[in-house]
Amino acid sequence: MVYEETFEDGAGLEDLVEVQFTLNGRKRKVSVEPRELLATVLRDRLGMTGTHIGCDTTNCGSCTVIQDGQSVKSCTVFAIQADGSDIITVEGIGNVTELHPIQEAFQEKHGLQCGFCTAGMIMQSYWFLKENPDPSESEIRWGISGNICRCTGYQNIVDAVRLAADKMKTKGGS
Amino acid sequence: MYSANFKYYSPRTVAEAVKLLQEHGEEARILAGGMSLIPMMKMRLVSVNHLIDIGKIDSMKGMAENGSDIVIGGATTHHAIETSPLIQKEVPLMSEVASWIGDPQVRNKGTIGGSLIHADPSGDWGACIIALKGKIMVSNGEKERAIDSDDFFVDMYETSIKAGEILTRVSVPAKSGKGHGFSYMNMERKAGDFATVGVATQLELDDKGNCSSAGIGLTAVGRTPMRASEAEEFLLGKKVGIDGINEAAKLAVKSTDPTDDPLRGSAEFKKAMCEVYTRRSLRTAFERAGGAI
Ligand SMILES: Cc1cc2nc3c(=O)[nH]c(=O)nc-3n(C[C@H](O)[C@H](O)[C@H](O)COP(=O)(O)OP(=O)(O)OC[C@H]3O[C@@H](n4cnc5c(N)ncnc54)[C@H](O)[C@@H]3O)c2cc1C
Image (cartoon, rainbow over all chains, first blue to last red; front, side, top):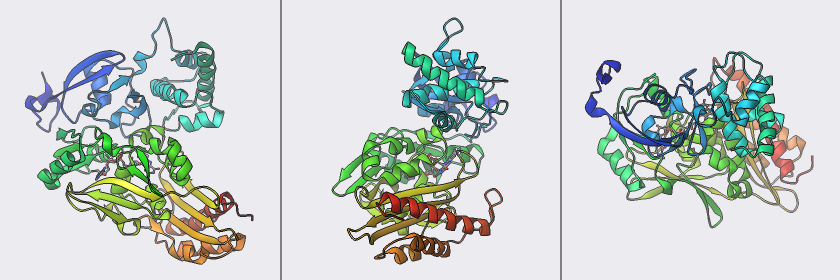
């Protein structure tokens, strides 16, 4: 264990607390310092590196995950706040052989360029399409207004979300 | 980016939370949605030794009717308020205001109580509660007291809550139906940004079309959210027409005291925009109240 070396503020092992939550359908238990963020715990302790940290200041939305049914920016949630929660990350909605309709739509419409913001965009769309399964273009833009893409002009992303809505209507995706 | 370390508590009742707060004094802080506090902790603008998370106190969440008032739990999220059928029906101004706060993820976490206590002069809830002439309820564990919206905000990031108290509920009179009109107009630099100027209005017209109640709250034009008192007084008892709205908007600017903001415009610009947005906000409220321009 290297916690003392990792954090210069001198928190020792005795300061670790145990956090349990359901991650993508599996119960997980992890020991963390109270100040550790959900985003870094997902990435560094649980290996779920699909969740990206872009700005680390609650602005860009790359770190968006679902906590108890709501989309949240996981760089601004202490992991310990998630104790007892149900967490879904991009790894939990589909996989390479069986993509989620939103992932398919992002691929088909090429709703990305460098791809850094994509997991956050997809998770925010996942929440948004549950709230509003048949959104207009302006509603989509409002719905993803907490997610920043610095490559595209959002056009293909908006098209992808709209296509995902159609796919989910016909497939009854979850 | 990490904050300094802290001890974490997750009480299940208001009484437990208040007890912890009183036990640890200045070293303790309440954590609600964390949408203001966690960024400040990460940037080391504040240091907290004992963090008391009220996120699992169920009695502090939700909305209910209480006679002619609507009561909102202090830990209710902006999103829950925005989408609540009760709020949309009884105090639609609140759901309109909520929809302007930050972005969807911020609204999913951030709470009305956290926002009011944070008392950012650019925060949107202050103007809303002022326009509605609402009350903010705080408790020290033994007694709950109600603070009038006009007495709540003291200065930038400062309210009249006392050490050892927590904000438990917000109470506003129901304002909807025939003769009622409301509007929140918010000028944003970009989607999700804090307001450059925001104006919350609530109007009531009697059978003859005269204004029988007026509330106007202003965001981001002074050290605290403020009431446009002169404009409200001017409207009361009058038949409000386009001239009245224009005059009230001019009077609203008199209540403001903005300073130059390097991000969101000079004091002069904010005053000019305050007039424009008050005019638009009043006009929408007036039309929603059934008034004809
Ligand atoms: C990207 C971004 C954009 C934003 N845009 C806007 C915007 O446009 N408009 C706007 O109004 N706000 C905006 N906010 C702020 C947001 O509304 C916050 O939710 C709010 O300011 C604080 O609420 P919270 O529940 O997150 O409180 P926290 O951050 O948890 O706490 C804030 C403060 O209040 C105290 N506190 C919290 N709850 C209580 C309580 N019940 N009793 C006593 N003390 C308490 C805490 O100790 C702390 O000092 C934005 C935030 C972000 C990150």
